[in-house]
Amino acid sequence: MRFMNTYDIEDAAQRFANHPILGPATKTLENLCEWANHNSDGWAYWPKPARAAAKLMEMIERDGTWQWRNSYREDVTVAEYRKALAPIKAFRTKQGADCDFKIEEII
Image (cartoon, one colour):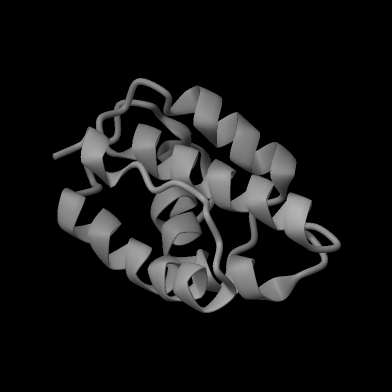
């Protein structure tokens, strides 16, 4: 499973801020990370939110090599983003998390 630490998430959020799909996706991940930091020992120490976001992190970073760090990526789709949100929505429901999803920004 891919893991993005807080720095990785913030870096991706800046890099993809203007991307039509990855911008909202990284903001969603940033919101989940922030929620975990405020409601537990922290993102790095509570594995449940990171496991829920595994598909989202994989979509954002792919294999982690330089070619996927380009902000002009066209390999992601709205359908893939929605699929990656499913486990996060389940986590949010089970934990009563109030973190925001940015799906409405890309519709």
